[in-house]
Length: 185
Ligand SMILES: Cc1cc2nc3c(=O)[nH]c(=O)nc-3n(C[C@H](O)[C@H](O)[C@H](O)COP(=O)(O)O)c2cc1C
Image (cartoon, rainbow, N blue to C red; front, top):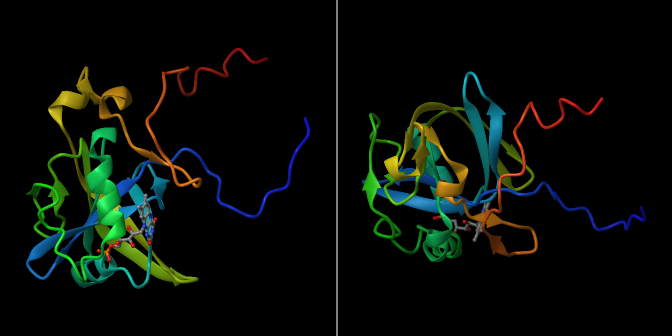
């Protein structure tokens, strides 16, 4: 297969666009992030990395809590807005309906089908970014996206954001993990 060398780019696809929530003063603020992923499943730990200048980071460092909210395709406009506008200049607290779990320092978005409450366990700077590592203390899902009590990715309908600056939805299920490769040899 002929390969073409591209400019260096972190082409780890697909990744959902997420909304990082933090409390700023007495209001929630939400910032869009593509840089977000899993570190460990048990204990459940995740990371996000935000530009050091972003307003949301201040709230995360002050309170040591943040949230990760997984939006659906039908929230694309609001998600993009939260990535275009900074809470330092514009109040974004009314873009979504906010609810709280057991912790008042991690604002959660009602419209987003999945919500993770994260306790900041470590942060560090790299390049112009700060990496925030959070241990998940509470997980919520909208009842409407469950099948047999478990989150159903097709019902969640996550919003994928690509390095070509395009939003996408997801396609069909093509197989099962820890199973699709079983009969390879
Ligand atoms: C789809 C999308 C993905 C983004 N991903 C990131 C990201 O991973 N890290 C980051 O620092 N900024 C990211 N941004 C930019 C921030 O969301 C944007 O600068 C935002 O206004 C910061 O908000 P704040 O100042 O209220 O924290 C993204 C924006 C969009 C639209």
